[in-house]
Amino acid sequence: MKRRIAILGGGLAGMAAAIRVAEAGEIPVLVETRQKLGGRATSFRDPRTGDTLDNCQHVVMGCCTNLLDFYETVGVTDLIEWHTETWWANPPHEPDRMRPGLLPPPAHFQGSFARMRFIDRPLKKAISRAMIAMIRMGFQGRAAWSDRTFKAFLEEQKQPAEAIRLFWEVVVVSACNLGVDQVGASFAIQVFQEGFLGHRFGSAIGLATVPLSELYDPVEKLLHDAGGEIQLGNSVRGISYDGRRISGVVTSNGLLQAAAVISAVPFDRLAKLCSMPLRQADRRLADLDQLEVSPILGVHLFFDTEVMSLPHLVLPGRGTHWLFNKGTDESGQQHLHAVISGAEDWMDLDEETIVARVLEDLRWAQPRARGLEPIGYRSVKEKRATFRAVPGVDRIRPSVEPGIGVPNLFLAGDWCRSGWPATMEGAVRSGYAAAAAAVGGPGVLPDLPIALGPRLLGLR
Image 1: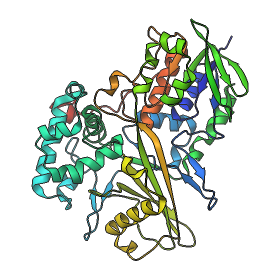
Image 2 (image 1 turned 90 degrees about the vertical axis):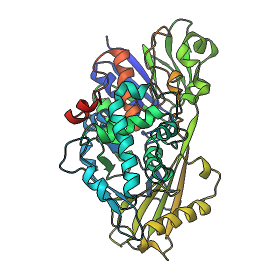
Image 3 (image 1 turned 180 degrees about the vertical axis):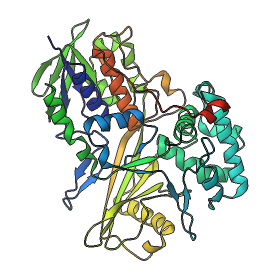
Image 4 (image 1 turned 120 degrees about the horizontal axis):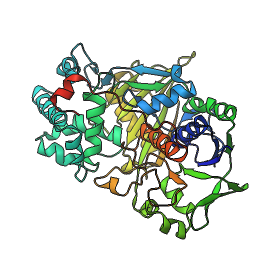
């Protein structure tokens, strides 16, 4: 007989786990408190205007093999627009462009990097030295930095303060949601090793051409066709534990019996669902209270004319890290989405102050915006956007598999020990791994293969 597997949480980790459970021939029952799927990577209807807005700008990269597999399985890859180049603001000059050239990795960015004007030649030489060091240390060398900050690594590589401010900081805070002085070095080094140095396509960025919530519309039909079930608007109250195994979950609609449970809710939510006997019985649950969070701020801006023609723009050395062009409608109104990662210092600010700061950065980066006021705006604070990827945190990030804990409880979420920092890729990896541990079937897909050049230089 097919077994019923309860999946708690309808974010990317939960959806990925549910799909793999269905593929294995079991019955996934996905329970989500909200009335929509997507978790922290979704959209909402703005009550002021009725517009559908993303809670934050989420980006897929070419190195995100499991997230891309999820999109392909769901059938939405045609809704992702790819960009192999990134634009960096450099006023009063035109923005600089970083893109892969004809040389093979790891030298594929060498030409465009040499032509970028917002950093001078001595800074470029210093940055190149650190990149070479990250290649030569390999993956084992990266692991050796797990207990130190990326700032310590940069200091060991004698990186000038200006190189850190203009280059390293904006890349790392965007990828890891923490600044270089806080993030664990192993996480930041991984971003460069796998995203920029190992494969030509690794650094490509994909942007959804529709609101994020629309990417998940096919999931419900996919699971229903496989005999599964999605319970939206059903809140989980607790996980039933009989002293040996999980027997099901208590929800606002009653008891849901299940042969196994995959928890894909945030760590603080999971802590509230577990009784003390359950937490004592499973070592993975003991350190949930020690994990911390880091916020992200998204700011939607609307103008009655086009102020930015590029698809996106990196703002080096500024409080706002990225600007994304969400398009111009038939009436000529443009929608921009500004993103501030690691936004701890912004969380207590009111919306007017936030918008004023972002406008200052926008006008610095885009001359056409000077003297213009937005016709509408909306700031979105994700106070618990990601876990804090600080040095040593992997020691308390739990594995997805039970080990010597409760045998039919499996964990998923980007905060689990997925091998990745807090990203959509990490969430999907954890969901795939949890489903494989629970019901068998394929687990995590391999990373992009490291190209010959970087492998010969030590990146393996």
